[in-house]
Image 1: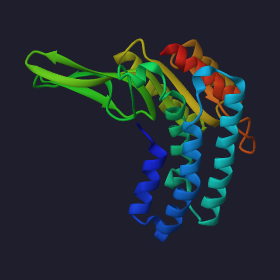
Image 2 (image 1 turned 180 degrees about the vertical axis):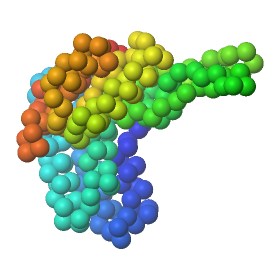
Image 3 (image 1 turned 90 degrees about the vertical axis):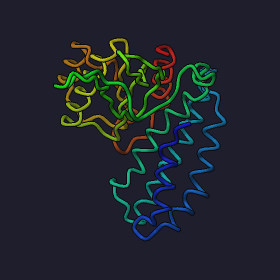
Length: 240
């Protein structure tokens, strides 16, 4: 299973990031692992409102501790501690989906199918793209004498701690690329806060570039809203 936040911790510990590898290890063992176990214990499929309330409380508490840890140790956003935890949330939400548990679908974030390109030598090349969170199906295709293994995306989610106009343009381009290659893919943005004007969002919805955007916080000082987390879970589960 893909735990991108945990992998980030392990890499930072291994490389003694900023000379504070031991402090990071202590936080990982005493705070992160406890949070992970709590989130793994939730059964989101029951759609019980209290489940999402309690899970969101765990998430908000972890963010509070993570913020204190990064501030006290002068860890910048380049560490991707905050962003990778947001990416990892989707794993907790959907890893128990029956199609993922039985192996028909998988959770991925690298090498997602983004189209076919034919070079000047007439050789077929498979275009691939990294996505923050993807639920897809791994398949093999044969073109003439060549066999390619590809990951067809069903759900593609770009994850942002905040979204501004520049990032929004990049997200739209990514979504267009995926939809051109796999027309039935559903593309979403999951973000903490939104800084994009309503006119751009309305335009994107009209053009059907993105299927939906989920904003977890009203502003940077707000807590994550459990109702948005529940809406996100419901929508992705329906799409699967």
